[in-house]
Image 1 (cartoon, rainbow, N blue to C red):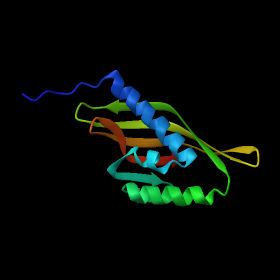
Image 2 (cartoon, helix red, strand yellow):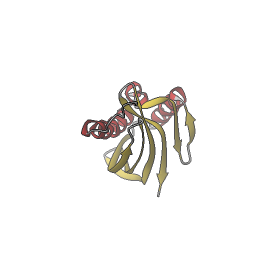
Image 3 (cartoon, one colour):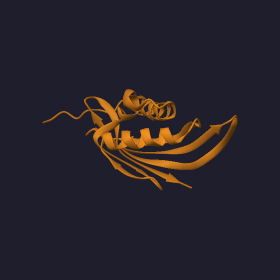
Length: 136
């Protein structure tokens, strides 16, 4: 009989860290770190921007978006994380998103919304397989 892997507190902590890594990498323009949050066959859906399939498509979108900011700083605040991880290495999740932009010393709350996630464990690491942003 095959052994079933047990989900541990370390798995849950790894997913929480994944959320933080995603937000900081996006905010700081660390594209390699951002792309490392995703599976090879990932899908990222962002309302008003598009649907991006695969790491390179997501990287291109992020690079172009970052270049368009023209000195504006962004901050993703990801809270209220809720996720379920399965022993087969898949999972689903939800989190609330607050997205701020700062230009010339003025900070504005740009978007409030949420992320719906599909997670997958690849080589022992939890990653986003699919992420859909929703804006209120």
